[in-house]
Length: 202
Image (tube, rainbow, N blue to C red; front, side, top):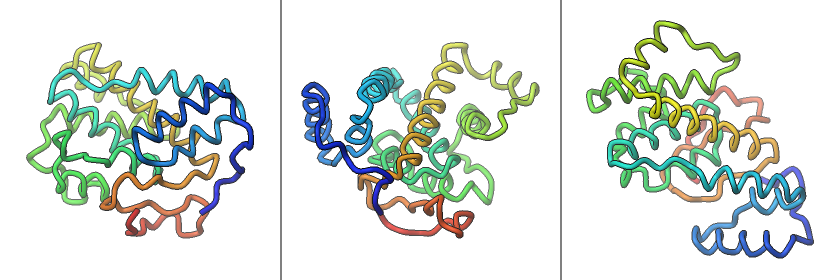
């Protein structure tokens, strides 16, 4: 799959250095950064946004945020985002059965391994990623009883950040980078069979 536009032949020195550092750290070609170099302000702004990603202070918080990222990536059907956020998901406390459930939309209901807080976080992620946006008052009331204001802002920011990246990445036609070999890729949004999830390895 080719991107919608080619990479620029000339990239500003500082951006070249930043891209090299990122690619050395990940071992992958960072096409988003390369294509954003056509408009350096977008590249710098996106990098600034990414630098303030919430990672969580405790194991429970890290697991919760990973679930939020994965749920958001699956909800908006972004292969690149699924690929990136699925990388070493088990190290963040997400089991393989939970990952498969996120992929398939939990057809048999939420597993007992997910706490009520985590179930609410997954639903919140779906609502944030839906169009049009709608937040039922009863749901928000329940959310507020389970989470602090800080936690709600952190989840909202995390899901919104994934939404930003998925729309930017898909609007440029950027394919997955190959961070994981076990996630089922979502279909190409331009494909007539977009509604059917194809099981394909990265």
